[in-house]
Length: 179
Ligand code: CUA
Image 1 (cartoon, rainbow, N blue to C red):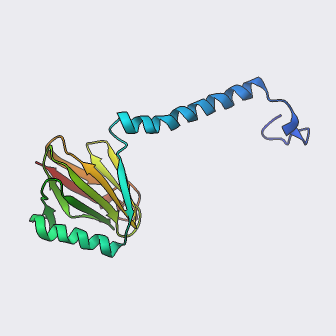
Image 2 (cartoon, rainbow, N blue to C red):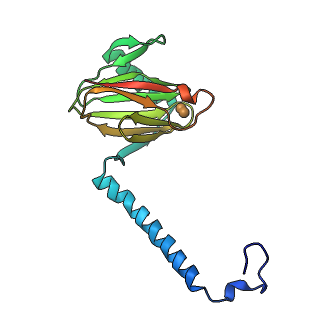
Image 3 (cartoon, rainbow, N blue to C red):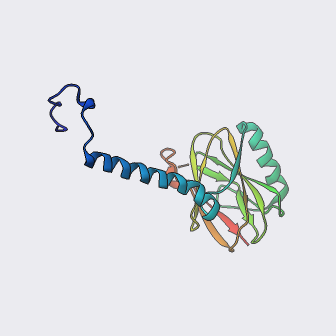
């Protein structure tokens, strides 16, 4: 049988499988299963697949909570856009909002302290990619995505959007301070 011409016998699916074909199907199947079980394995052993919670919410409700945290814990503003830099106390809920094409506010966290980081998009899909760490999270509209984070190294990290979100996708970046 060739892939270009139609099969000479119309009822080709009754013909026995060639050994080569079975072998390749098994190779592909086993590899799919290996990759599938790597996901829970990496969740437990690796550091990339973070455990998260997600709650349905609305942009208004989310923004209200984000605004409360900004009002309480802003320590300064940065860039021409006067983006607030929020330095929240240990253990608190911190909100990072994605929208076309900015991240709001800027967070300033402390090494060795844990925070509940909330992520949400106000319009459509964005991606939270923390550089140079290998952390990648999809940021969805309509869902408050919560992660418990404990920064381990001080520094200035970059946040870049890694889901294509329109004409200014490439400018959608921000920073994260860890003291
Ligand atoms: Cu936001 Cu790409």
